[in-house]
Image (cartoon, rainbow over all chains, first blue to last red; front, top):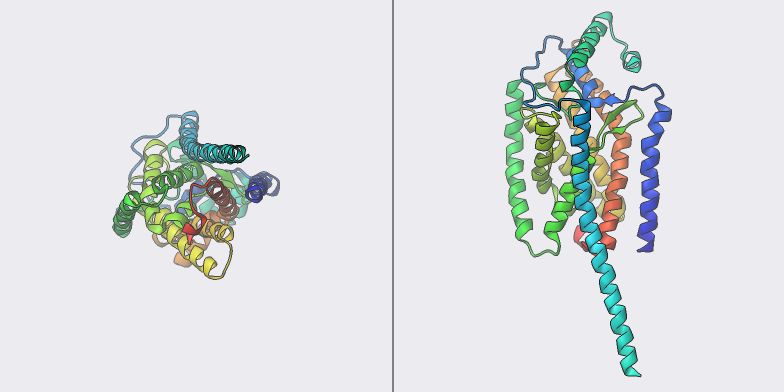
Length: 110
Length: 251
């Protein structure tokens, strides 16, 4: 158990490094979406292509968009945290009960 | 924005086209930040083609999901929810990459390793629909194509990777890492091919277009895929150490 926890901290650190390095490597990068660049490339390859349909609803502003993204992320995080937290609590409780029982048994044996 | 121009050493004409499209984006921000292939960016016949290709996998996914829900495997339903939630979280994270642009991981690796490739095609569709309807991210007409790359090719490549890694006697954590990395990366490689077939390069044909789209999607995705691999192992470790899932159930 301890080994896995340590491994997780190391992995988390690696993720942080991976996310932060781009700011040093690609200095001056615009950090726009790769999907946007893809679309620009489409326009370049086939300038005559007409977008024939538009999304039926778009977030009215960047703020609303980030709100919805946050909602999406936090919904997922909530579910994951609940499941793992619940399991963690159950495991601790089981351990506690086992310890109490072992103590009881040894007390009775005396 | 300057960097984009420096990277693309293109003739004057395409610079003008590029400027026009930038102007287009400035005027119509609705098209910004679309996931994979956005609404209207594929001609109708291709939309229909990808829907037809993806549909059988979706049905197979429903069949697999039903089996898991009625199975007696301990915590099967809970883990299914966790895998879906994991995709939700990861596909909402737009991370910066060394290429100076942003993209997001897919998160399908965890569910693939736990339940096989079929199930992700159902969970993935839920996420793609959420993003298409509420975030104008991706699209309803391109849903088939996006499903094919993210929820079919990704998971199947990931699953094959996992099996091969396990056959090579690599540990479960390493195999899972490889599974998640390749599932993520192959998704974006598929997107590049999907776009290149429809929009060949004016000078170098489909091949030239593949290279260009790979340069945009696949290269950006490499560090993100690795980050996704790490995150997948973290969640998996938490699942295992809290007795939610038996370690040997992963094969």
